Length: 196
Image (tube, rainbow, N blue to C red; front, side):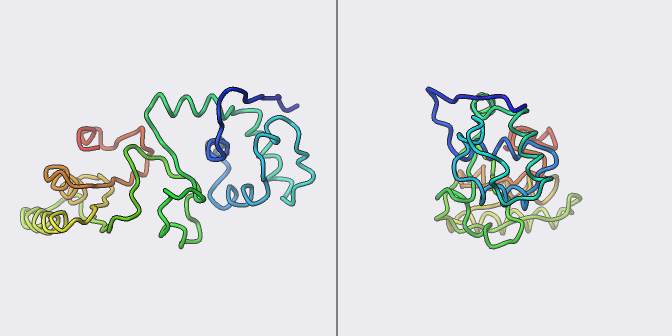
């Protein structure tokens, strides 16, 4: 049986309901997109006032929806994110990077710290983890020229070229984004926590 959850006194935005689905280990980007296209009011769903049988979804997806509702409370999950100073945006928000929506499996939710500015020109600077002294020099030079011209540096914050580019941007008080594969609350390698 699905627990009833009444979200009174706190505005629960659509993105926090989507965050709960995103926490389910068996729900990926495409499944989350299918779910979101079918559900207009997540509060009705979480409070047992929306019949899953009325949704045009596979039974396996309906089962995942039931599991998510019984396992996660959007209010509690929002508070957890707030405590860690983690923001999120979803694909219908104005802050969501529009270029990401051009790929088939775009992430419906992006977790971030800081702010997203879609007016920036972004260039990714990524490369070898084992960088030569020449590679270091060239990365620093190119990155410095880019940030001096107002370009936002995007990197993976990995060892080598990524972290060199990120550090140059930070040292020049420029905007830089680190796209992390392991989540915004887990900086890897740990030695880059100061850069994040």
